[in-house]
Each structure stands twice: as C-alpha cells, then as structure tokens.
Length: 112
Length: 115
Image (cartoon, rainbow over all chains, first blue to last red; front, side, top):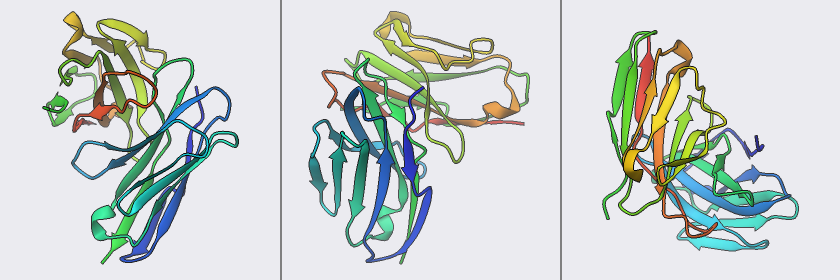
C-alpha cells in the first residue's frame, strides 16, 4: 500500500488570505499526481493532473507545483474566497498501473 | 457529457443487514473505481475494474463486500452483512484512461450509515 500524505489536515483562513498545502508521495516509480477539489454534497472534481518534474499548473487563483525527485507537490490558493472552502485531495499513480491512491485531504475553510 | 451517476444518495441500515449501491459510469469509460471514504480520511480504493475484469481488489474485505461490473458498464457494490465501521461515503469514479494524465470523474457518492 502506497503512502500518500497531506498536510495540514485542516486549515481556517480569512477571505483574501493566500494559502498552500502539501502532498507527499513516494518518489520512486512516479507516474502522475492528481489534485481534486471536493465540495460538500458534490462530486470530487479534478483540478490538475501533473506528470513532469518541475511542472507548474495554474487555474485562476489556484496553482500547483510538482517535485517528483523529492516526492512532493504544493497547491497554492491566492486571495482565498469563501467558495474555495472544500476538501483538497491529492492522488498518486505509480508506474505499476492506473490506480489512484489518495492522501487524507486538506479541509479548507475560508471565513468571509 | 453526462456525469457518473450513483444511487442511492443516502442509506441508513441496521448492522447485519445487506445493502447495495449502483454506479453508472460515463459512457465509453473502460475503467471504473469504487472508493470508501470514512469521515476524516482520504478515499480508499476498494476495487478497480477495466471493462468487466478486476484490476485490483486487494483492499476489498471479501468476506462481506462484493462488486461486479456485468457487460463492462454499470457496476454494483454490495455489503453483506454490514458492520458499524462500514459507515462511510462510497464513491464511484470512471476514467477513459488514455495515459497517466487522464483524470477520473466521480459521482456524488452514497452516504451509508450503519446503526
């Protein structure tokens, strides 16, 4: 069983604050890393899919970086808004197949 | 395109009862996953299908859980008999899997409460 860890487990920020979370994964046999956002009562939806060391991806105020050699990815949210409140999940795929192994998630709450 | 459909959305049963969940993946998606998400934890893969064959079921408690994907489309996940610790959200996801950068699409999940 692969070990994928996320920190922090939960985070409370004020509207307008910028924040970031970490996803740690095995650095060997890396294939891909996915980031998902899961809002309450909705389906998890993909934010980014990253495959290359040094990758940086951006979608609006959210961006992510990837370091496959040391086994971590950062997700950044600039100027947090209440609608960013959700659980952010990372999922690792190793080169043995297409199985997504999820971390425990970071629960973000943005106060107006 | 239509998303991944799951039913029911919520289910409350007593321990030792049986329950079944249904998933209809996105049309054409060969890969189907069932995940169990216990409160405060990340989703745990229970079983992964490729068409109607099982790719991985190493974390499926086979003494009480079973899953099938007849004809490589819809899938059902059954728990028989249920235990209190089975209370969780059961998520179904599907993917066309054309490479490591292929995202998975999730249903809204079934929230199971075992009392």
